[in-house]
Image: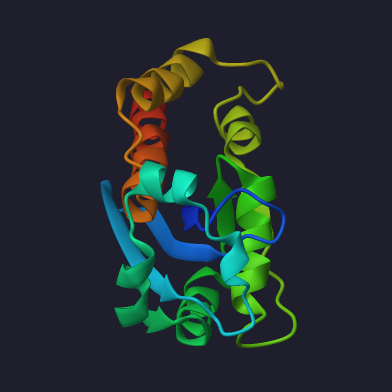
Length: 173
C-alpha cells in the first residue's frame, strides 16, 4: 500500500491547540502530488490557543483563516482522501491530535490512524530477512535533510513524499 504523507500547521503546540492548515502528498506515477487547505477555526475551538510564536514559524496570520474553508468541510474532504490509506507523518503524536480534532467537527468517529515516518521507512527499506538496507535509508534521510522545512503543510508533506520517492527509486536500481 502506497503511503499518503500528512502534515498540519497549528495554532500552537499546546494540548488544546487546533489545526490551521493541512497538507497531504503522495507518489503518483513516479511524481509527487500534493494538496493543502487552510482551515477556518471551528467555533468550538478556543482562540486562547492561538500563539504568536507559532504564527511566526508558519507565517499564517490568524486573520487569513477567516476566509478559509470551514473546519467541518475540510474534515470531510480529508476523511475522504485518507480513508483506507496508509497515512504517514513525521510527528504522528501531534498530527493525530489535530486530525482527531478536525474530523470531530464533522463526525464523531473515524478509523484514520497515523503511522510514524521513521517506522514506515524502516519497514519499507529493510531487506526481507529484517536486515536494514543502509543505502536506501541513507538516500531517504539524505534527501530529507537536504531540503529546507518550509512550515507550510502542503510543502512539508511533499518533502516527506519526495524523500520516500528517493528511497523507492534507489531500491529499484
